[in-house]
Image 1: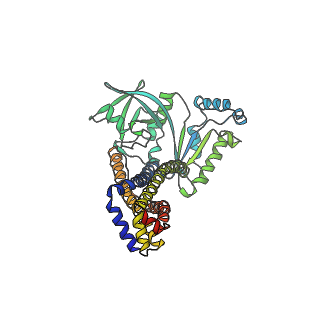
Image 2: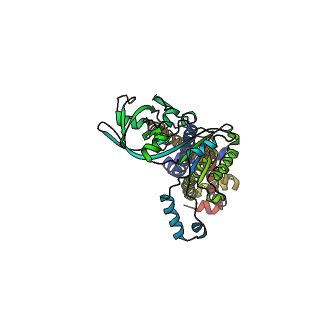
Image 3: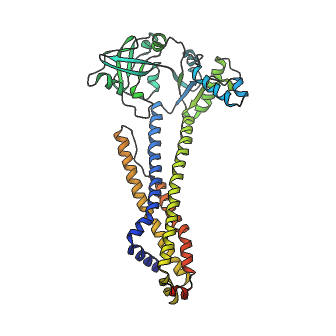
Length: 419
């Protein structure tokens, strides 16, 4: 076997250009796998950080349009289209802050706050911008883990008193005030003047644009901006995360009692735990990752076919050499091992180069992500490296065995006649 190794090294170094071109498909495929898995690790870390900002002990209650009897009974495309239009035009108004007051009294519930949202134009002097604003209950600040860069949060008294105070996202503050200190300044939101009392720290690109948003007391948003008495989202903090699902089911039953719903299929709300949100993300991200790896696998297969074709060419070129070796006593297994080792060495070389290239690309992705303000983590998982090396070896054996067997089965007399 050692002799086969030496012969393979000699053959590969004799034509370095062909060796490099032979490994190219493997290099690209392995680099893609490494990049995808590394990017997945970084992105997953980023999402974990974003979810942690809301607190791992949070549940989310959101309004939803329940399916109608007609749309459930009909499987036609028309019914589906009608339901789709309905979900975009029907507004659920049954979810009230009073519902959350009752939910706060349930076992394992630490606290809760409601959210309402709208769009408006905000202006400060000559600076004007269209924004999405949120009205939030003051209890938000004891549950939400986001912090302020400057200023303070609004109080319970300011919330119940519908005070005209606002908190700005960091990008919004920069757009309106530039280098000026926004604290204490008055901004115009819609037709009303509000005092800026705080500015959030940057929340990142995956925060849903929170850095460009504005927050005001819930009662202010409802009574003075929107003219409504309902909320669209409730955030509930639980005491024991291990009992979150049981608490979520308790909240569902309480909401059904409050809204006089007897059929769960007609719920006008959804309750989602952090674990369920993470499961949804994992399912989506897992599908995307599998798709990208499948694309990389095609490149690996193409690279393997290329190796097999090159090995057939090499066998043909060295037919006379094979005949001479067999005439001098070389066994079929010796010839088989020599060409098989050569094939495996080519793919292992491609795998190593692919791992290096993939790691470099992953690092460049990390640099770009951090430069864009994302809290990205650079990581090349060990399993990604093992996959790269393992796949390389399997491809080398799988696609190298046929040319190697053809070489081993050659008749020495016929091989010696080959010119």
